[in-house]
Length: 562
Ligand code: ADP
Ligand code: MG
Image (cartoon, rainbow, N blue to C red):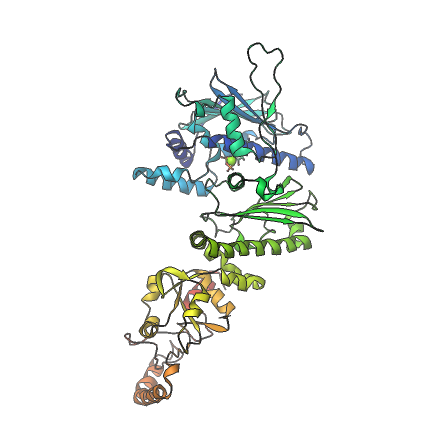
């Protein structure tokens, strides 16, 4: 069969250019990426075999193998996992399917024009393509387990790649890097050196649960060929005790499962013993993915059963408002054939979800006191998602309110907790006031704010769409009602008593004619025109009844077709 030449998709080509010319300081991570892909491929094959989905596959000695050739200047990473079909290679390797990466490439190109790309490139995982940081040509030979024909993919990372059918490919995938010319000064980064490879594997891939083997080259005068060495300890990190594992090791696992190159913000461990045994190792990322609010967002927690990978994105393990959490849950007593539907109904899984939820929320709480800066990052990235839990999870509502913070008129840049607000409440103030809107600025300019500003009453400035809803549902904090500044009558003069009442009555009489006339003229448009103490400068404003939907919420429901 002939060789076909294809063009890379535009974003893929741009990414490759960036990789090739990258000044990314830590090029070693390409090996982590290739090993990570190999490990995923082995996971997939084992699971298919356990589920009897891969009758013709060979699962007798699943492993990863690394081979170096200093003369030819090549490095090969090989696995005997699931492999790819001809079509899959074109689809998976020729394009950037992940729209987040495509977006990143655009950002990166802009940053490159302004000279700030160096910091950015280290923040995103680009998987397979990272090989082009160290290679001027990559060749991949693969055969899908159970299929007869293999495929060879090859590219110099420029604009095109070639695909060709091959007949003698072993099951699985091997990726060969033709390394760029050697830098004689730089022995530490000579990827044809067995020592270098061993160090990199230990540093980045030790926890991979498949053996990563390398056969040392036969030395001068050796009779027999040396035996293959296993480079990694293969111990599942979540099954090891806390003091045996370094933070760096945890972080490498995070990068493997999340495909994020940045450090996580927080690591959460849980070991449950008893009738339903499980181990969890969860991570709070340091950045929200751009698609966190999309319909098809993939949740990050993987399910294992006794060290065997079962599924990605297991949505039964955590509630939707914690969908940004990544990690691994390894349960001892589940069937390997367990399906998503079964998990949703399983009593033990529901108990596990409750416990994991509490653990994550209490971790956030600890972060609030122990590491305010980290908490601030957390809240900026994930606060809006977490607040969804105020609606959906009444069991944890109080705990979630306690870790929530809000922009406030009290401070330009420091958000406040509800506790902080209540502590600052004025004598006689009986409610927590808030106003929702599109931005801090639009809220501050609202006529509704005038009287509050004049009287120095603090108002929470809520700008996330979910704020409209939770404030209504939650209703109160610490016995104080949450009250929208834009709804119903506000009585900020409560404390000044009878004198104000007298004055109001006098005004009502004075303006009775005008109000009657206005009520009549505006009958079609508004329910009532009345005098108000909420304004100081503006002559009039529109308010909703206390029980009405706010305009933003009305829009939201309308958009949802309700
Ligand atoms: P990611 O791992 O984040 O999906 P990569 O660029 O690392 O992105 O890989 C792209 C895709 O190519 C993988 O999702 C996988 O489907 C496929 N792939 C890469 N390496 C292998 C391999 N060794 N075996 C099977 N499939 C692979
Ligand atoms: Mg990958």
